[in-house]
Length: 203
View 1 (cartoon, rainbow, N blue to C red):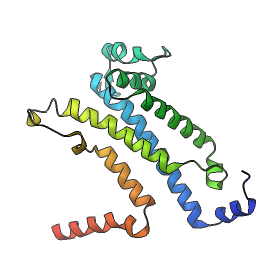
View 2 (view 1 turned 180 degrees about the vertical axis):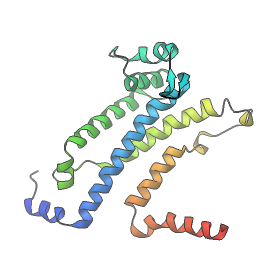
View 3 (view 1 turned 135 degrees about the vertical axis):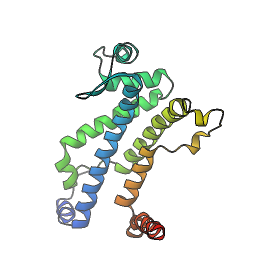
View 4 (view 1 turned 45 degrees about the horizontal axis):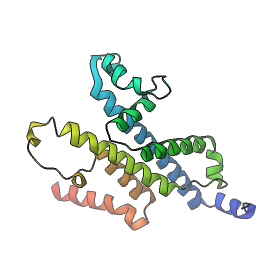
């Protein structure tokens, strides 16, 4: 379907339309970075075995043999290796891996065609992609909480925790960002007003 030049210019000159596109673009980029972080950082921290003031926590031979060796392209890429490790440990499925690849391709295309996104000639399905990212981040982070953090915390020993009751902080952050940035006016201000009310009552 050909784009209507008049409609494209009308939208481009409409402050509300442009602001909305910029907000959605920024939100998608932030969400994708949080997905990349969820895939790699917990695993890196899990295998970290040394620390220095210059580099912080660093991994060693175990990380290389248990994680980097899983890179399907044998190039020890941390991102691909981490996905392979998460699949091996039943955190992610083949479908999840395909979704991550698709989202990454879309993110790369999006970054190269940002001008077209803002101009309206290229309109990614932000809502669907954002929901997919939130689901993946939640799935990964929830697994680490249930299988590592709670399992090694004596305060939670012997306690039964339902999966649905665990909401990772990063997932909450993404949902709050979406609500504040993309919600209708009343909905977008709801969290701020509630926070201000609670803070005032506590003061």
